Image (tube, rainbow, N blue to C red; front, side, top):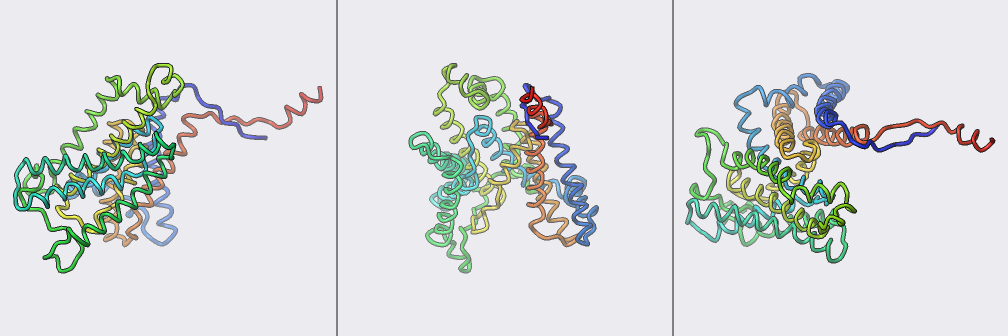
Length: 362
């Protein structure tokens, strides 16, 4: 008896929607079992991680602020993933985007206003795009795998961050702590709702998925991305340039990651220190797959992952779980969504080993 996987000609759309939901529910179930097994109230822990941030109104703003960079980065990554271009270095592009925005802010000195803020955000996008262009160049000119090159550039970005915040950009009034000086109030993004931390970047993160949806579903570029990713041979016969698609995917992914870094810097943190890299670039990979590489799916998945971030902090104080628990849940969700793809896209068949032998005997 042996197992054979046969690719389904057309996966069910219902299954493509149901499996991400099932992955989240299965993650919650396993979380309850594992926590109970190690002596922690599993039901309360899982409720605090997945439900409390949605029911407690005072946590909504935290979820919104956490979800914004995840959604924006995931939108850029989903373009590349649809085209089979794998950008794993969004974390580095996110860091460089924030540093470029900080560079404009430092150069502006005490000047502020909407123009300065706009220039900081644009600088962040340009910086992330330039960082994403390096793997694109290496892939198209020297056939270097973009997975490795983009990932290694993340560590280069970390070194650049360490050098700048601990050296030339170090706040002289920061008590020798490696960080940039805080932004002036008129150099930050406006707050949308007084008394909260919800800034303009959150609104941008909500609007962008619908823009991406229109581009991907109603434009020639969106059609090109889908064709190159699903049928490369047909794309070549259709006149679509594979190298052009690689460049577009990497530049858009880098630009969105840089935008997220700039918005996080100017909207939420207002300073850059050694703790600025928070793993958003890596978590956004989970968001893009949990959202089925669809812009609206990325919006919903970004909120789900943000809930686990905030809920993990709630559960730390309520049931005293480790700080890394949220990351464990995120990894489980990614595992289940990828595993479910086997059942969605392939049909499992059991083939008896005796049949070929009987046929040979005849």
